[in-house]
Image 1: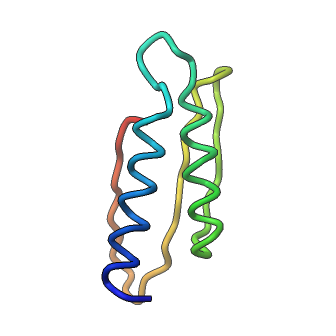
Image 2: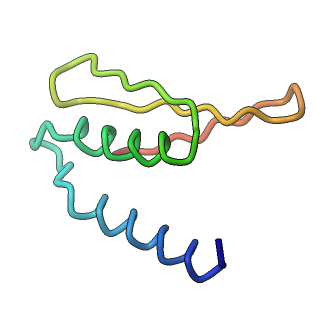
Image 3: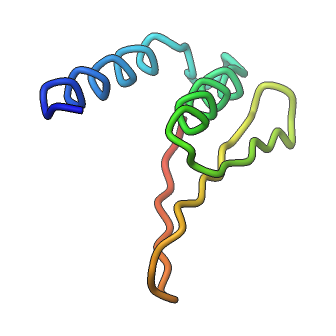
Length: 77
């Protein structure tokens, strides 16, 4: 995949995420988490969707590395 294609893909994913209403009272984070889950599935990234409260979903994705060290990245959907 060319650099331009990768850039375009990332741009499209970000545009799609911005268009999902995840404002405070929308109870729509699960929709954004499901969208990201689909993207992870396409790339072969292991992930699990959690929804402790209806509409308040979170996604945990794991990318296996070569070292025993880990890093956690966290963001609000």
